[in-house]
Amino acid sequence: MRTLRTVAEVRAALRGPRRAGRTIGLVPTMGSFHAGHLSLMQRAREQCDEVVVSLFVNPTQFDQAADLSRYPRNEATDALLASDAGVDYLFAPDVAEIYPAGFATTVTVAGITETLEGEHRGRGHFDGVVTVVTKLFNIVQADIAYFGQKDAQQARVIERLVRDLDIPVRIEICPTIREPDGLALSSRNAQLSPDERTRALAISRALQAAEAAVAAGERDAEEVARTARALMTSDGVEPEYLELVSTDTLAPVRMIDDSVLVVIAAQIGATRLIDNQIMAINGAT
Image 1 (cartoon, rainbow, N blue to C red):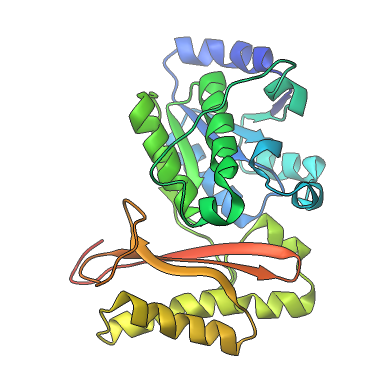
Image 2 (tube, helix red, strand yellow):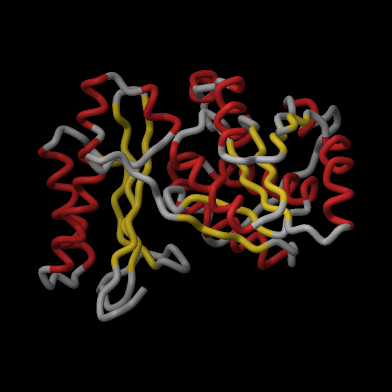
C-alpha cells in the first residue's frame, strides 16, 4: 500500500490504472478505523481493481472546536489496518492540501440538510461534508464510492449531491456494523468511559423497541417514537432527537405504511452519538 499526501500524487498514481480501464473504488474516512470502516474497504476490494481510502479529519464539518480537537487520530494504526484490508492507496493529506490559501468555495445541498443533524449541528456541518466529498470525488475520480448506513442522513445527502451535479460515481451504502451487544461502531466510541459505554446501549435498545412496536402492529409513528423515547429516558439518556422519517426524503412520517427510517442522536457524557434503523412492513425493503 502506498501513502499519498498530495492531490498531484493521487492523480499520478491513478493515471495508469485509469487508462488501463481498471475500476477504482473510494472509501472516504476521517480515520480511527474500526470494523465498520474495514467492511467498506472489504466491499471495495471485492468490487474494484484499485482501492483508495482517504484519511482526512475535515475541520469544516465540525460545529465545535472542542469536538474537532477531541476527534481520535492514529494514522500509523490506520495505515496498518488499511494495508491488511488490501487497500492500494491511502490518501492522507494535511489541511492545507485540501483547503489551500484563498480557498473560497462551498458546496450546498438544500432540502434534506436542514433537519436532524443539520438542525442540531448547524447547516454548515453538511456544507463541510459535501464540499470535502466533492473535492475527493474530483481528486480520485472513482467509479464507486462507499459510505456507511450508520450516517444515514449523510448518505442521502451524498446521493443527492451526485444526482444533482451529475458526478460520474456510483454510491454504495453499506450496512451498519454493530458490537455484539448492539452498539453501532463509531470512532467516537473510544471517547466513552465504561459507564458511558453502558449507557450508550440505550440508543440501540430504543431502535429495537421501535422495531418491536411496529412488528406488534403499531402504525402511528409518534406512538412508536414515544415508546422508544420512554425506553431511553428510563435508561437515563435523553435523545437530542428521535424521529421516524421517510427513507428517501427524510421528511417526518405520521403513519407507517411503508419502510421508514428511525433516526436517533444523543449526548452520552461529552460524546455525541447517532444511530438509525430501517424498518420495513408489508414486504417493503
